[in-house]
Length: 499
Image (cartoon, rainbow, N blue to C red; front, side, top):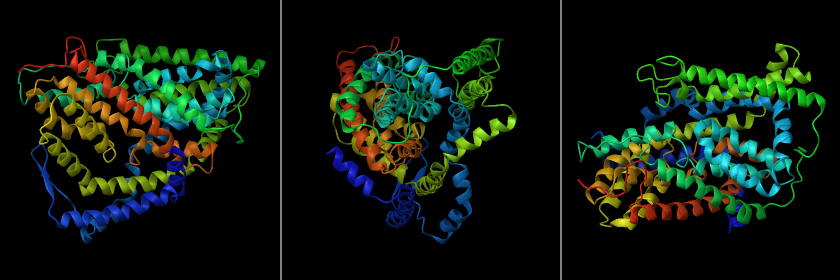
């Protein structure tokens, strides 16, 4: 079945052509739906949301004037390019190869997948930077031990995307989710109060369960689909490091430790640390420079040791060499930039049409009026979140719509807002790697083609389906167990709730 999905998917036109074609489709669809006068009321703001006809003269004029700004405003573009400037220098100097030689060779090959899954599941602490950087690094690890690099790329991509709501620590994603959950709960109970740790215990348990699950899926379902890698990319981790490489690694290690020490100092020294929220002093606040600057901070974490390593081995002798290495890394991103241009136009048109918002509200109303309760209601909500996630990429945008509907609804039937939030976050993760609107799909497609020029979206989707299905079943069952036995989701937070 997966082979069929891959073949059919790869026979589709180039992804750039697909996105441009989707632009035409969404414009026609918007005209049809708008002509029917379809509208909904936003459950959070009370604002009336009406389908917008994108084929009117006015909307076409707006499109013409916004093509450049759509491209400039495509959020992943800047994140990817800034991140890859740092990672590119690290790669082009050879630091990544030497690091993998020095570290992966010490890990038993039978444990590599487990290690990759563990790091990938925790990589969401670095927010979007983890999604950009980790999958290609995982591909290099597999290449280095003589296995097909696409096994590493896809398993790394699955770990980062699907495990976005599982971790052993609180991240900015938890804070953002809680910022919508608490106000929605206070619509029913003005005294309700909770914080970003409301799902922490469940998240920690989920992390270990999902690491084991992802490792099993990789080895039993994904890996057997790939034969021996016969491409041009090579890396030999069994080879010994030269004296120059050892020296470079030593200096690069010292450089990254100094850099980390500086970041820690800027995060802790003083009443209002430099990287903390200027108003609250909170490091994990969405307004904290640490959170807002996570991408450049991660990029520098690659760039600085990369330059130091390059100097140590003699590959970098002057500033022009550094600029040349950055330019080389950007040349590799040409295909991604073209794809990002097409994707940005479609995403903006889809946003302007309001069809995603209408679909979310209509879906919420349908489930609300279905009259189901208990575990079936929970399963229905998770499936609804999975479906809506295919069309609206932003987790906070979806939760802003769904929280005012489902948080009060679950409270009325006796369930804690923390349970509703966790159910939403599970559904929000499951279809991330399957959605053509997921912002980071183009970067994964670019790296996929690096190792297999014939691969396409069908290759990615076919290898993500086993992960998504397995995570949906196991993660949902785990949440139902917590729900049925009223196990704590977070410190002092239980699934049951009495008004």
